[in-house]
Length: 306
Image (cartoon, rainbow, N blue to C red; front, top):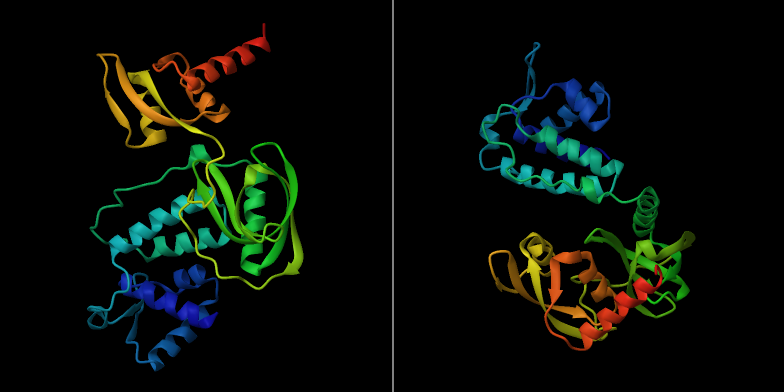
């Protein structure tokens, strides 16, 4: 739309001294003639536009107008670019790519400001093509307020069909989630995309309800499994995995090669699998109900191969 383009042009010229008409036309995907008409429109709105001819010329805004009128500083732009770059890696969206490029073009190439001191690399977290397809379908369904029908398998292996109003997509801990209103449950629910066997975007639309994005993991229901405090002796090579999983935990030096750790785990297969992924670098200290169930789980695994 023209008004969006005009705002974009103003933001660009506030950040850069001169921009050629050709570069601006390519950036906003219009002709040079349209750019010149936009300059006339801005001039009529008392924006002090000027042009300089020649190979090093271009279009600019009078420097006196820029004083205290910058909408975004270089630091602001770098912060936005860092965020958009991370988002673009996770969600390959044409709109995100265009916005990211526009923001990068708004940085003054002659600026002496250092490059952003923070970068985000999600390359090892990229999802499978099937999940990417689901994310794109749900993103469009959210924008168009279209109902979706899910064939969903919960953590207990129960399969159900859910007709849902989609509201929000969330990427957390290597996984994508959909937050939406389940018509079967008459309440908001969170669905993990990797548990969706089938996904269909319906032609039927819905009127959006009042929806507030809540911090992930805050639910009114009690936990499905009994949580248990477990004391562990871990090798120093496994300390990193403990810190990344549990953040601030009770951890202290046991000896030169080991640490003593207290963590809270579900007394269930999910908790036992976490211990297993640490391999030979962990020892359970407390011989209690959790320990007995973990040993039984190990014996069950061993029985499949011996």
